Image (cartoon, rainbow, N blue to C red; front, side, top):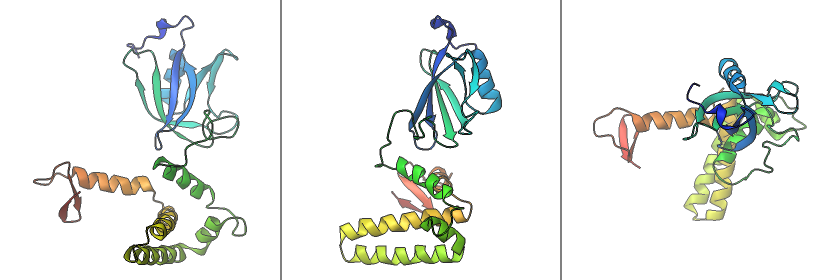
Amino acid sequence: MNDLNFEKYSDGLMPAIVQDAQTGDVLMLGFMDRDALEVTRSSGSVTFYSRSRHRLWKKGETSGNVLKVCGIVADCDQDTLLIKATPRGPACHTGQSTCFGELDTNGLSFLHRLERVIESRRNSAPEDSYVGSLFQSGTRRIAQKVGEEAVETVIAAIGNDNESLKQEAADLLFHLMILLQANGLSLADVSEVLGERHRADNPGLNPQTVGFGDTERNV
């Protein structure tokens, strides 16, 4: 903290950009003084200095939509903060996920947002939610659905039907995400396994190979 340049700005407040630690989405921009930063670090919840109320305020203190801190870094000039956080609900007071409008539904970051939607449906009534009905049917039924979608994906691939392959692969991934959550796991857990295999300290392992079980295969 001693290296941060709060004095650069006349009000002693430093811009703090909040980024979703999983998706990379920019959630919001706030301002911090030294006290706000210290509370953020010690509490683990993003806390800003409110320029309108002239006091510290924890994001989500009334709505419950807090931002749990994963990491804090400063820019090269030490006068702007980047806070990586996990949101507990919408980051914007309008109810949207970010303060910058609609999110792009393309790209891998969408999978993390979809995962949160699946999680939110876990306790939904079956008549209100397909995902809720699957959770209530139990792991065995969810696993059965994954198997069915896997077979349909294979059939589409063998048939060289790329359009069907995309659709079936989407169904397979969707149901796999539900199965993971039913067992208390997430895509991040799977990604971690792949990362560990990639970094495995095996003779001859290099950045172009990934370990699968007891073997290595070129990526």
